[in-house]
Length: 243
Image (cartoon, rainbow, N blue to C red; front, side, top):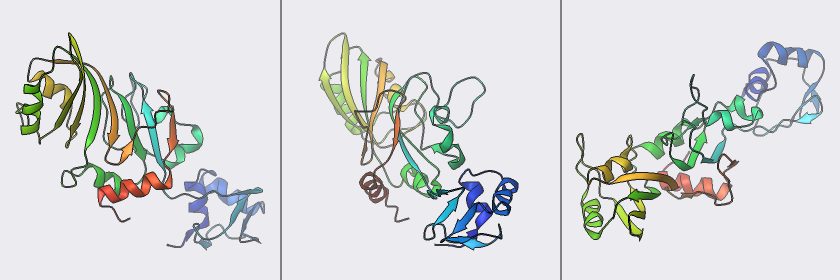
């Protein structure tokens, strides 16, 4: 754990700008381990020391990990001039973490989305070398058959690449079929393109799982929560990320 300037720690935790933080210190409103802080540039180890600002203990977190049940109509981005983003759905008190979505879901796709400010874990989860699988539920316009299962298992040839083998499970058949599909990549419109290669159209798509992380069924569309320690540990292990 590294030592950091007190004013930087407080600013990064949303307690104000560096200038505002210095004013808090000058006003004798900050203590470190029970002692009055007189120098905003003093060095602290925020994970280990008790920092109190204006009577409230600082709940220091270097990283934050958020599971969201992404709704349709919202884009997987940090900012956009035309559409609401997944970051816009978060409470203002989390804005200072500067989280970003790990990967993306199309604007009309629902389901599991991980947001974090941990770039190392994000890179591990998205690296093709790690082959972190993603599971989706979909409704397909048309009849999905055993032939499609066999083709998905071999890899589907698209215009620009051939997908890695994917697992396709038929839940119901008819004019509209319901399926579960697990893919190893996460390329642009991949699930939709895989079915389109057989003349089938995806009319609804929901991500259920990413690696070891399953969508919490109690989350309504647009809701979110922080990951549990167990979920985070399992996700790190799946990504081969040892922090």
